[in-house]
Amino acid sequence: MKTAPDFFNHVCQEIDKKYFPEVKYYRDNKHTEKIHYAVELFNNGCSTYIKFINTLAKETKDSKENIHTTVSKYIADFEGYTYRPKL
Image 1 (tube, rainbow, N blue to C red):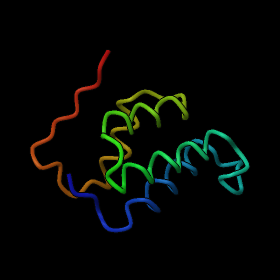
Image 2 (cartoon, one colour):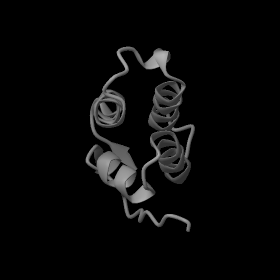
Image 3 (cartoon, rainbow, N blue to C red):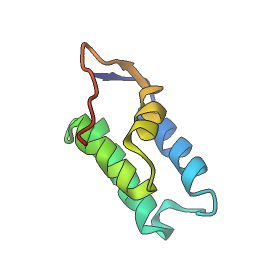
Image 4 (tube, rainbow, N blue to C red):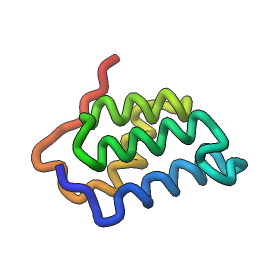
């Protein structure tokens, strides 16, 4: 899976603006801190896509499908991978 250039910043900014507009600095909120850490782990290749989406969905309290839609805008190439969330 190939991410777009500046994946970390784009995903974090979009999620922060959409779900936590009142938080000024990500360390001020435990949820945004966990989100930034999850994006960093995925971006560095230390986490799987499913675990990444599950963590974001849990911390934002949104569905996995919505999170996948948001994140997939910044994936350059899925290289044949098909996301299938577990029910």
